[in-house]
Amino acid sequence: MSDLADKEFSTRAVHAGERSRQSNFTPVASPIDPSVGFLYESMEDTDAVLGAEKEGYVYARYGSPTVSAFETAVANLEQSEAAFAFSSGMAALHISLLAAGVKAGSRVVSALDVYGATSSLLRSLFSSLGVHVTMVDAAKFEDVERTLKEYPTTVVLAETISNPLVRIADVPTLADLAHRYGAQLIIDNTFATPYLFNPGIYGADYTVHSATKYLNGHGDVTAGVVATSMENRSNLYELNKLVGSLLGPFEAWLALRGLKTLPLRVRQQCDNAQQAAEWLGNHPRIRQVHYSGLSSHTQHALAKRLFNGKGYGGVLSFEIRGATKSDIFRFMEALKVCLPATTLGDIYSLVLYPAISSHRSLTPEERSRIGISDELVRLSCGIESPNDIIADIDQALNAID
Image (cartoon, rainbow, N blue to C red):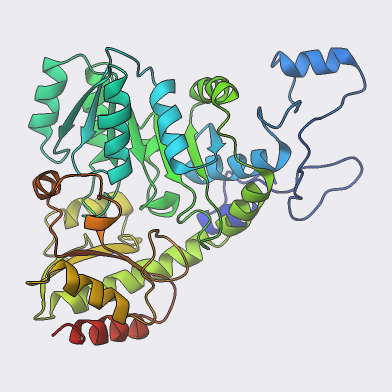
């Protein structure tokens, strides 16, 4: 369905990427097209498609119809010119960095509190290849600008809502700073989703998603996707032809199907997270709750402005006062509704202990510098009843008293 420009988000989520005409009929839902190769009536046509002179498909590593349907839908929801899908969120981020020009001698300025695997990708893999990496507090604009002034920078990287401390990136300000000093801005929008925020509208050059999370939303697909300009997509396309981190058609079909209920799911997850955060904030065993939907959060006003009052995300984190590692383990083992799994954004409520999972690769000192204490638990709210989520957390906290 191509005429979606004047439609609201929920309508676009249902229809974007669908109704690609095939022969003399049009399927209502996009089919799965698993073919690796594609034939044309003439070799001239094949030559034209291979040379990007004509639209089409020749080999699945270069693209396929089902994957294109998913990419079209994501580009529509992110209000970008194009999108490109990958086999995982980490692949999407990795190739975005390369497409933005990161190479030996380049510098990446990254927000300090990014996902642990993102931090490791930068500080271990890219650093070993001669890339200079500087980690800064992205909320301290004077520090960001000082770094950009001091060092020629290729990429500034941040997360709209950070993992796991759910700090908010002021994307318009970061975009202005990055572009002023000749850098490109990569924003990981996984936690916010395009329902809450479109980084590209505010200057991000690449908007990255782990589509494993909210975009698919059902805990049964590993995928990544990048929303960007047509020119940048061409760079991603050429790199992925060599790297081969393609998304399969079955995964793309599931992700596209999951995308249709994104606004319904995220609205409920935001509401559940808000209620859970408020309840936790009044619990005597909780030292601190990290959630921008709370008026006490230092970035509440920024989050309200960026997300236009639509919600504050489905993820929060909280610190259990005086809890040891064994206490956290007992708390997680006592949960019955919330599941202790190392992912987020699903229809299920999920809990995670960052010290042993998402940020395990960091030393205790590095985690402390970021603000991730050994008392910290991350909660990704699902779509269950908020009363049941809260009651489950309550009984699990009682289990460690």
